[in-house]
Image (cartoon, rainbow, N blue to C red; front, side, top):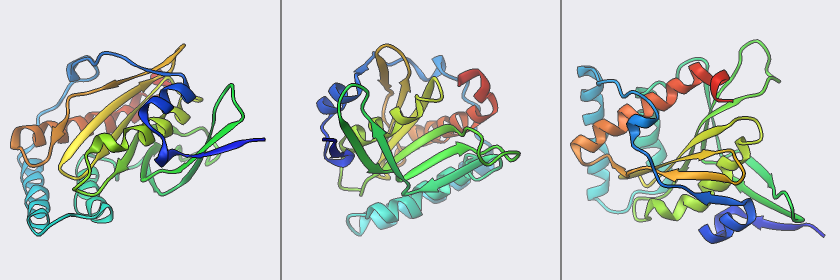
Length: 219
């Protein structure tokens, strides 16, 4: 009989065990891609995003839905995720089968960015970024088990994928890589409120978005 599990209820240890996933020591951002400087316009838009979020944050806890609306949406628009051929999907159900057990892990993606080929809707999509959002009072690490579970789904068709878990203020990126066993790296945490780390946040998002241009090399 198949055992059904909810991805949101899994611990990090359970994800390691069920998905045969291991953590690897993190590398520097420069080991993955070159970070381009932001234009004056991009820096000004980033300040607006930061100030809008600070205003809501000062009033109290910011809900998960507001985090998506106030922060993630404008950030992803600013860094290229709204441009062709990238397509965003939200709250998609995603069943994930565990290889050597009669277990099915189910969950719902908050945001998934894929490279959608225009010539064939049925063609394999390249996952660019998986995003798990939390409200502003929750540590992004709480979303790590869910994020890793969803990201592992893409390794059936490509060699690696980036993931992000955030509460609007803090941003935790991970890189999940196919292998035997599959591994993941946790990158240094970024922050929207801190000016320097918010600039790096936008640069990292832009660099990840541009991965869709080299999907054939990474798949």
